[in-house]
Image 1 (cartoon, helix red, strand yellow):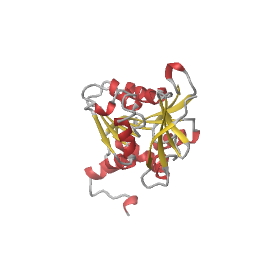
Image 2 (cartoon, rainbow, N blue to C red):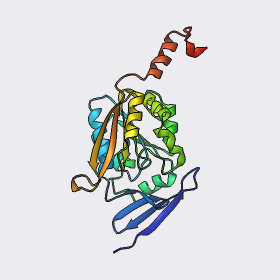
Image 3 (spheres, rainbow, N blue to C red):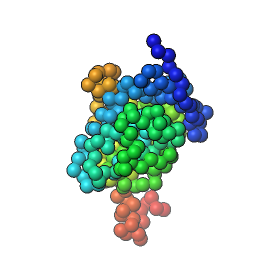
Image 4 (tube, rainbow, N blue to C red):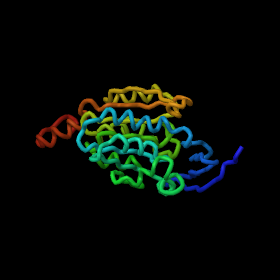
Length: 248
């Protein structure tokens, strides 16, 4: 068997963890502290997440997507292939080296999606983007860990809390879609999404798409109604003199 070759490594910002890029023949693997985050042989479910999301926002004028976690570019490539010419995708990737790898040794795997003019990459924590852009995105797609639990960095835990999900809800446009990739189901997370006000569907998809492989979980959560916090902020803008018990 061909041995794995270490191509590069990079520190996760703010963490005592290291991402490592390996190659074995034509196969690539990205790992953190010995745990595999992604492998180029099993990217069907990452692409499926983008396909499922884009199917739900078909027909919207100038759709705006936010992808948290660049990975090997498969989710980005699948989204671009299904968006029209007016669509735009913002990618938030915390580790600059991952962007470099996608412009270098990983570039051809997904068809060089970073070279598409509809793509904008920010080397920043996706949580910062979510907080800073209320009512901006038609869809938010997250694949920064192996599910709704921090793996790459401890700070990611916030993304999966009630507060983090509320922030994501607020960052979506009306009827926007929140999607999360996971290696396994998590009933508690489903309940948390519902508690925020999302209409939730869970999809089980094959790791290798039509070629089979194990099953992964994708949550598709629709912001079907305005978030209560958003309605309250709008009410205060429309009637600034209004006072409630929460104001006192």
